[in-house]
Amino acid sequence: MNTFQLRIVATDGIFFEGRARSIIIPAIDGEVEILANHEDMVIAVDSGEVRFQVKDENEWHVAVVGSGFLQIINNRALLLVQSCERPEDIDAVRAEEARLRAEEQMRQKMSIQEYYRNKALLSRAMSRLKVASKYKH
Image (cartoon, rainbow, N blue to C red; front, side, top):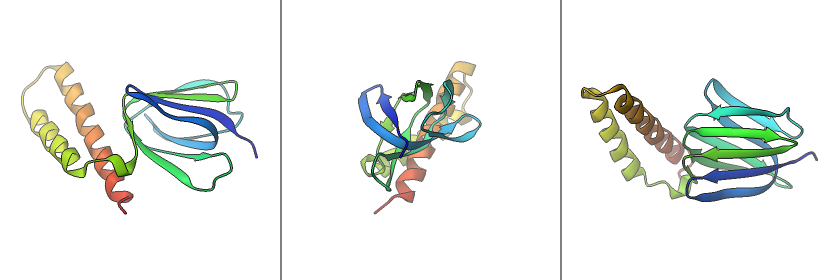
């Protein structure tokens, strides 16, 4: 079975490193799936759900990521993101509080820079809540 080297790195450390069969990322213009021997490129990644299959497993691994980018060179994929966490590690109460704070901030007058920062915070909170509820055990 064809595989590629996958490395997922967040600002707080390495989330995953190993051989993978597939990774599906939330790109700016929709989901993108990367398979072995994909053409070399760089893709902007949006906040959302990442799914990947590792070598010799049929199970999909899931994570919530912040914005970043995916670089593919010579059958190696490097996903660099602001944050990355497993669904079971998400504190839904804290994520809901972050969503409410971001929504309140969006209702107030602010600079363009503050607007985009709060928009990103809201997007991250919504992604965390969506994945936490989807994979709740």
